[in-house]
Image 1 (cartoon, rainbow, N blue to C red):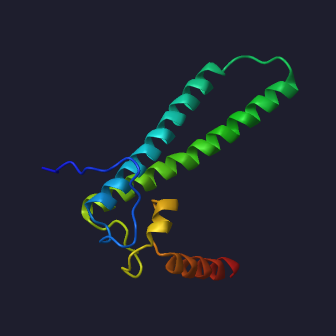
Image 2 (tube, rainbow, N blue to C red):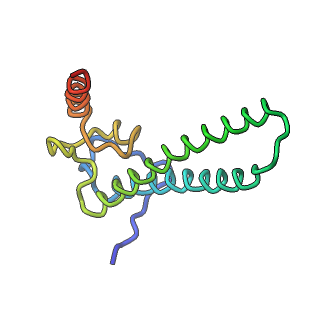
Length: 140
């Protein structure tokens, strides 16, 4: 059974405490859950809006504009769906005790990076190396 971790409302992880201690893990877990909840609420709003928006628009230009807006909204939601999957993966890493460590080097990912991008799986240096390798292979 998991014990509840007390987390003051103004808590922010700092470098002078043990890395990925219970408070840090709980901070990132809550941050990820809140982010996921916001994305899912937006998806529900989109679905409702798309269902309501299936009306006949007589003007061709207005109809084209409406269809373009809908396509853009669906692309945005698809990106957010992929983001929700990454958030779920990060939550699993928290449960497995792997969160906050680079999947390439095993080194701790900086707290600043995790706070800005809580789904990060690599240190900034490893991410940059990875992107450089991808760019080289993409240019072939």
